[in-house]
Image (tube, rainbow, N blue to C red; front, top):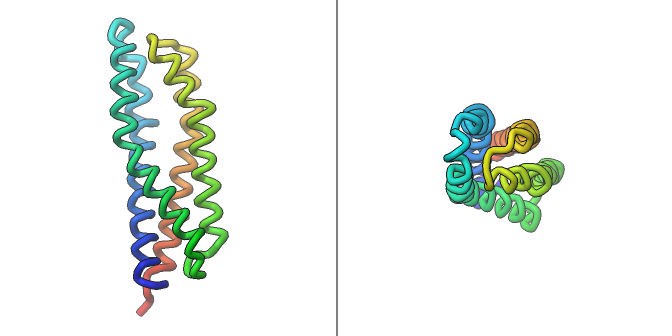
Length: 150
């Protein structure tokens, strides 16, 4: 691997593990507390959650997507194609899950706490949690492959 290849894998791994930590925090800590906010304050809470959520996940997703694209385009042979395809597939799973399941539930919750939407949100978010975790593992393996052996 060239120095640039190693930098790309390092940036990708750091961004992916940022997202792994973030999604596990959402799944285990933040989402389970949604039902404790209180009915009167929930709509405002959800609006602020969505605003802040975007600010935090945007950079991680953009970095992982950009570095995956760089690995596809450069195809210097340093990153195994199957690993890059796995990263791209997991990103697609994350995006599709977000669009089809989590975003619509957040849309329902914007007008107030809805127990059914809340249950779907928490349960369906496991898809993203597992996908980000797997993507992080693939990136750790790629980083391991990138490290020169002595």
